[in-house]
Length: 434
Ligand SMILES: Cc1cc2nc3c(=O)[nH]c(=O)nc-3n(C[C@H](O)[C@H](O)[C@H](O)COP(=O)(O)OP(=O)(O)OC[C@H]3O[C@@H](n4cnc5c(N)ncnc54)[C@H](O)[C@@H]3O)c2cc1C
Image 1 (cartoon, rainbow, N blue to C red):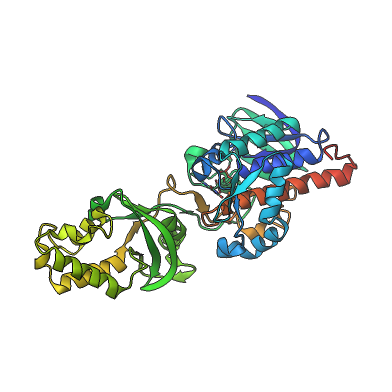
Image 2: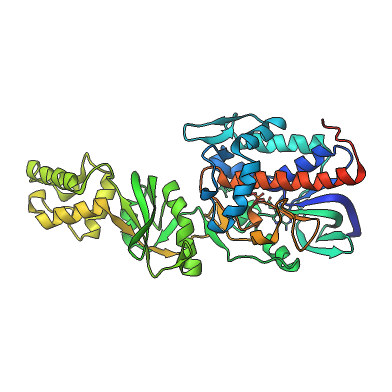
């Protein structure tokens, strides 16, 4: 190993969404007058970016507000959003060469519809503004030494006056983020909150789920804590052999995993949680009951499994019958009023009981991280001058819909610009990019 330290002004640890944006902002501002490097442990930059939004990259959202982020980060997020609104983030992307488009729900994507355009635009800028890139270089330790930071890896060591910590969270380690941020936090005396996965399928130990495996159906899906509805999401519920999934479930999964991790839901102690699905939200209980009674009257010799024909997915119907112990081969005329009542109840509220925390390989974002109180408005560490922390490494997580990338971009721009501004002030160097 080369024991000498490669010298840079600014080193960005982690070539993901936040780190790449920080690098571009920093290098662009002081084009040619600043030495910037991105150090990335994977064989290429932006692996996770390419996987976002099913390969389309949902970059931000026009329904933007701090309420879409975790409670503990909201005050800070409000300030960041007042500087970096959705329009500002879109304008930033335009300024570096990427145009965007908005869908009917306000979600913003690259105009090309390809996440690869986002990464390629960043790479184009890194190249143009002379940022050095070191891939397959995993930083294992960051130490402060006099007025510099020293960064160690198996391959080579680096030294820089400023470091941007952009090494992400702990979910989807296959895409790079393996929890290194929290080790660095420990080395640098930064406090972390408890970590758990969010935006993930919810595991349920119900052996009957296999009957409904593959069902995708519109539903109102609620999280109930100790019997009280905490949050309801409307969307497509997917039933799999060992879990329930779909964006509506993802949005509730943070609370499920908070429960398993801390025994609380939205900060309140809680003994029991359930996910409850209303499969026919447009219909009242009485309307559904009448529909089922009508079916029984008109098709008395058909099987119970035919009760749901023309109403809901047949596999879902079989699941509901099984849950109530009703033989699907029983003739419809033999279904009692009580059976009809219970089936109606199940259609309005079927409970899925979460049985384990979601796996880190299935989640999209890490809840928890380096405490927000550790940084100032420029994303600079209060305890460690010239160290910036951005993106998912911090205790910030949003719901599905482009909120996590908005945060990654906004925090990256903030840190990158601030790091460069300090050099401009000090050296009076020109911004040649203007
Ligand atoms: C499948 C999937 C789909 C998603 N879709 C969306 C979406 O459409 N919209 C949205 O808003 N959010 C989405 N997200 C969430 C979003 O991608 C993340 O919140 C965001 O990428 C976080 O950015 P980051 O730069 O902080 O971390 P990351 O993107 O995780 O980047 C961290 C980088 O640091 C590198 N690294 C880690 N440790 C080291 C080390 N020791 N040394 C050097 N490098 C290191 C990693 O390899 C990685 O490249 C999705 C997430 C997943 C997993």
